[in-house]
Amino acid sequence: MKINVEKCARMLKQKDNILILTHAHPDGDTVGCGFALYLALKKLGKRARVICADEFQEKYLRLVDGCLDMPEFEEEFIVAVDVATENLLGDLKDKYEGKIDLCIDHHGTNTEYAKYLLLNADAAAACEIMFKVIRTLRVPIDGAIANALFIGITTDTGCFRYDSTTSNTYRAAAKLVDLGAQNGLINRVMFETKTKTYAALERLAIEGMEFFDDERICVITITQDMYRKTGSSETETEAIAPLTRQIEGVEIGLTIREKADGTCKCSVRTFQSVNAADYAANFGGGGHKQAAACKFDCSVEEAKKLLVAKASEMLGEQK
Image 1 (cartoon, rainbow, N blue to C red):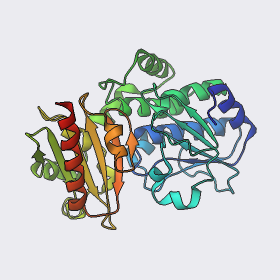
Image 2: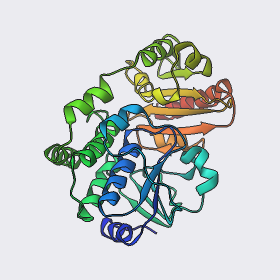
Image 3: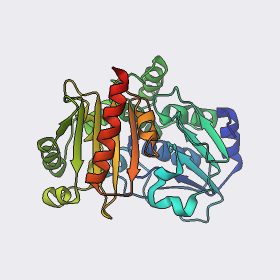
């Protein structure tokens, strides 16, 4: 059932022992939503905890105080944030599938798997929606909550560069800065700071770029061997996918990441010529018009053949 911000806030006020689920391979928006909601619920005297199938990057924990040592408890109410489908929960899916009470999301491809859904597909980031929820809860927004929300907004808009950025996005960001968000520090950490291991991984990724269909399709493949060679890991691959869309003439960018079990995941980046969410839906995935993702239970090479063939087909339809 779809609900509005007011009903969402009332529901959260009535509940306790709240478990907050973020999507696997967590980005700034799901982490920002999760941490901001946790801190807000804590201010209301409630017990809450944020979990993810994968490890949270240290940079998020450094920028948002108060999100370490969350309490353990038997969950009574389960909330998913920035999670369009239960498949995106990764290894948490088996445990929580069919048990999620509330989802707060901004993906138009949301499958409405939760009992209650607060959805605004026009929001550039789920943290835009979470900002409204927390204000409706009448929780004082301190610097830590403001930082968490600003992280989600700036990362999901590519530092306010993507077409999804609206005047409402800018207004929300401005209010968060007024409330103490460290916008300069956050943007520097998110967009201008690289670990040495990531820099080595990025170099291998660029060197291995492949182009198809008159160089309108760019493919980057990240393998387990590349992680071993660079000392990097999947937690550091968030900034790789946008590289494909930075190449002149590329209309579809595909970043395929090999998982430890031999399966893989693909991040899709497009421009106006192809809807990334529609493209990813062909493989059971989803997302936004220009950024989406999908998973494959096969090898990188098998997935690449399928992905490139469908990309060529969709580009052909645009001629």
